[in-house]
Amino acid sequence: MSDPGYSGKPLREKLGLKETHRARFVGVPASVLERLAPLPGPSDHPFDFVMWFPADAAELEAGFAEFEAVLAGKGMLWVAWPKKSSPLRNTLEFA
Image (cartoon, one colour):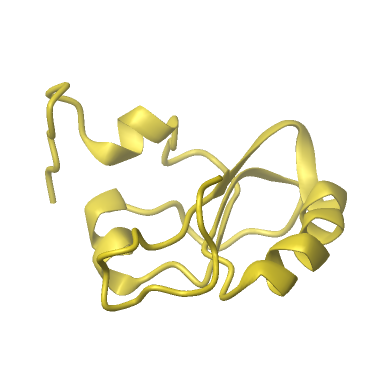
């Protein structure tokens, strides 16, 4: 699915996700995964790309060490959370 937004580029391109990447998606809503399609196939670490939607602030704090251990040297970690107006809102906020 194309999601050009204001820049005219699909979301996967904006994030730097390539079909050849070893990727991991944690807690990512199905609607976001659809916007990133086609997704890379299943793979083991080290990962080139990780997209993570932590459920709350405690998970965010605890999870960084785990992802640091499985990222490739130049791997990308994208951390995202619902905006305040979202029905999926959780305890995370941008400060």
